[in-house]
Image (cartoon, rainbow, N blue to C red):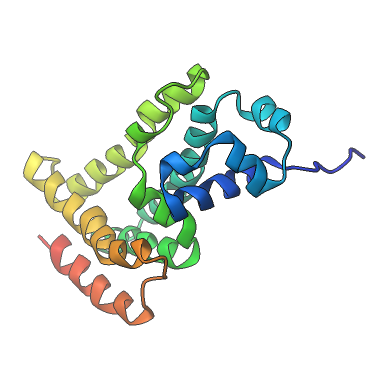
Length: 196
């Protein structure tokens, strides 16, 4: 049985995320992450190579967690409208249950991280991370309208991405979960936006 890691990568990423959310992306320096996480500087560089690679990894961790819920909801195989509502509500649920990761995705964009990273695989993932989401929303548009015209895709994006993000954004920026009483009106608004 191997020894437990003294400074797991998750703790380092959590410390970086807290700095970004509290003070902005520029506050997340290696020195400050070292202090916040308690991990030695050598351990941080050994795991992540560069600060940009660390920040890209932090951001991608949040994106993957959010997208996993969203994509799973769209693959339920129910009625297309019901699947779309479930996907949109996964955004709301993620914001309530994983508030810090959800807030990170509101304040940091892919182009904000990884610009000077050295990890080529990480750079490729940053460039393509939204492709599965885009395909899934295009497929939903086709299920709803019989084809994925640009207007159908725009309607699907409005309903399952823009509406839930807009509903939770101000709450996440204020570092609080979206209120429970928002869930049902949001679901009704999404359903109305999805109904052809």
